[in-house]
Length: 200
Image (cartoon, rainbow, N blue to C red; front, top):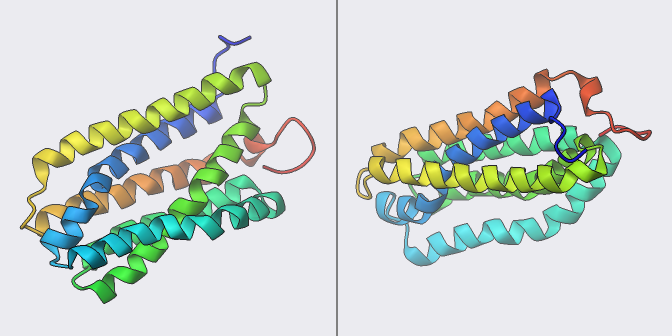
């Protein structure tokens, strides 16, 4: 039935995903400001670094699909989240264009792989077909709500010409990403099994 209560596994993962979205909201709208004004990287290079994240997603998407088929969406999501967390936290060490390349690549690879793997994982966990539209809509709503809350909070915290004001939000963002890693790692493996044969 469409109104049936979501499983404990889904509720736990969606809650962790929401807090991760709040962390992303703390940093995502301010990445250009951080790199350009706080770290004094030219606007052209900053644009190239941020645009590179989208470019990375082009080859990462199909590769993620292949990995999901071979090793499962849970494992791929775990790996992607770890890359994303390390890349995000590493941004606090950026002081030049060269030092920004590594963290941005890690973040781009992690983010590019995470969303396809996460969608596949949610689809597996939403075993009842009539529940899937509601679950995906809830997932999208939580993402937008988390991003909005994080953005508002960060707007009161960061100062464009004070790099130290950005350090906390990038570390919090990295830690919030690890919340989903912990949830995926600690929830019992059998709860990720689809109704049909195979591993998620």
